[in-house]
Length: 388
Image: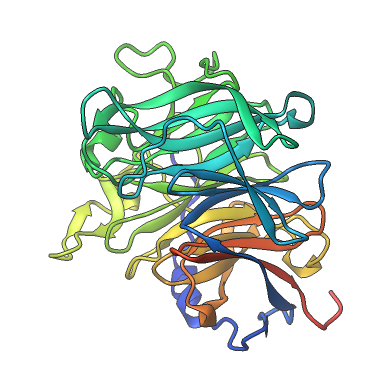
């Protein structure tokens, strides 16, 4: 039996009571932390993931779902398209999704991409992960190899996941959605609705929880996920935090547990879209599933992209967790005490942006936010007039 600490239910209501920013160019939080928002770049088409290049204070990689990987100069507000990518299927919610750097990127120049790609049968798709070597000067990815395919291939074009995070042991965590077949999340022969863990070359870590289990794919680290689109490494504990979509409500923030069953669809706060009927039982009523540390009980948030703040620009936000909101069109800020959420607040509510991803630039300590739209900006959140 695997159970985390019980969720702090009362903060769910608090989230919807705290107001965010109302000014057009600046705002202030409940902690009297002022900030302003500047546009870095415009004209992105459904951007999805972002990562900053170490040793280059002004360069980042930004993905666009139709299949483009951009080298962005955040100082000049310019971008160069990277060539050499694998064949990508921009189908429905699929396309080029997340991007991550190898922990030893400065030595090996390895970049990891998650994306949807077609199989041998027409109209069948699966989430893929590849890695390649980046030549910044030539704007090209070379030696590209596929290191993971979240099989089986299916015809649906939704719920691909997909976030990428390395842990402190250089193991790669990959989220895979349930592909609109909710029961696949509980099927340990399928890689749908799972968090997968592999080594940097695609091999299986010897301490994965199901490596010696008959009939279970050894890449599975946790299961019972609907569609996880946010994941971040806690900078102090090294734990992997993750956010995922419910159905009608029931969006969650979880802390990954090795071998853990996160409930979907047998234990969830979500309800059916049309009938509003409950789906399964509530998580506290199922003693073999992991209880979320935070959830949205009402209408869907749903969350996408998350980052812990550990910069110097906003001292009051150190240790806070930031999560992008799609339907609710805001950036959520969570104050964390250990493994508990103790306060929640909405930022950027007045912008009307579907927020797909949020990252912290280690070089300047600013928050960078990707907006999900056909003609979308990359923006940065910087300190306002008050002394931080």
